[in-house]
Amino acid sequence: MMFSSDGFLTDNNASSANARQTHVFTSFPNSAVDVDDERPENKSTTQQQSDSDKYALPLPATANESAPEQYHMWQIEYYQKYFQVDTQQVLERLIGSMTPRPNKSYFDSTIRQNPDLYGPFWVCVTFIVTVAISGNIVNYFHQSDAEFQIDFSKITLSAILVCFYWWMMPTSIYFFFRWRLNRIEYTFLELLCIYGYSLTIFIPISILWIIPIGWLQWTSTILASIISGSVLIVTFWPTINADHKRFSTVSILAVFFLHLLMAVCIMLVFFHVSDNNINPTTPSITLSTSTILTTSKKIA
Image 1 (cartoon, rainbow, N blue to C red):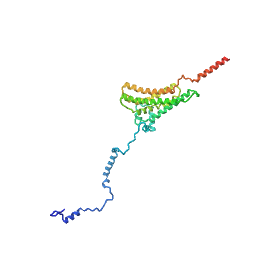
Image 2 (spheres, rainbow, N blue to C red):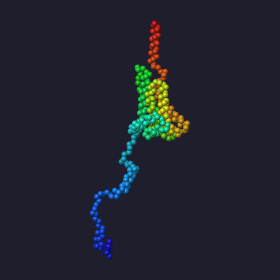
Image 3 (cartoon, helix red, strand yellow):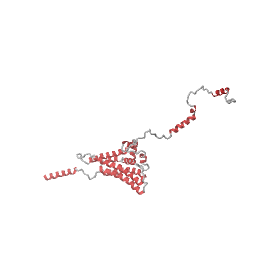
Image 4 (cartoon, helix red, strand yellow):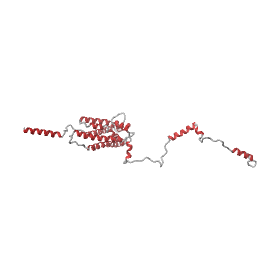
């Protein structure tokens, strides 16, 4: 800009300055989108930002967001998570409880990921009912039709024995590990799951116990205990082996013999019949026949 000698703009200079400061827009873009955003390099930058947002940590929960509902032990909803298994998982655990594999842990491969109570519960219920029904069938074969009556107390007795063993052994092992090894390798739920499935093999064996042959009953009892007991040994041995060698051997043998003792007790209480047992109606019939013959000879 040009100034006069007195410091003010002249008319010509002012008009030329105003002309230079005037801008007139005669064309406008057809779209409001920034042209730079459509370039390939800008697209890649935008994509990277969206990917980083996708894998970013979630924002902290606010007061408006509802937290998951918590249940107490006396509510049915609390136990729903222990029954969330499918048929395939239950079948694998049933089969695994009857097939000991020294090189593969039954617990680590089938139970640890999702321990449940659905399978063990129905295994125990089925075993209780099978023992009660089979025990009544044995009584039917050894009593006359007139004397036989269904013994419903067998259901109560079998339920007491089975449920006591199912809960007593996991409780004992849980506190044993805590006392002796000063650590917990298995939760109480996992121990309940292991011992519940370990009774699977005794369901078909309880039907075989109906046959009134002593050696067959004993053989099937011992064989079933060895098979399912071996699964328990393979499961607990890595943990028990951390203890003193002699004490660990005694402990693992105690696990097996208690398992065998349970099977023997159920077999003896409900199924075993001594070979010396004789139908109580036979002596009276024989006595009556001999009395009749003696009387007829005296009369003759």
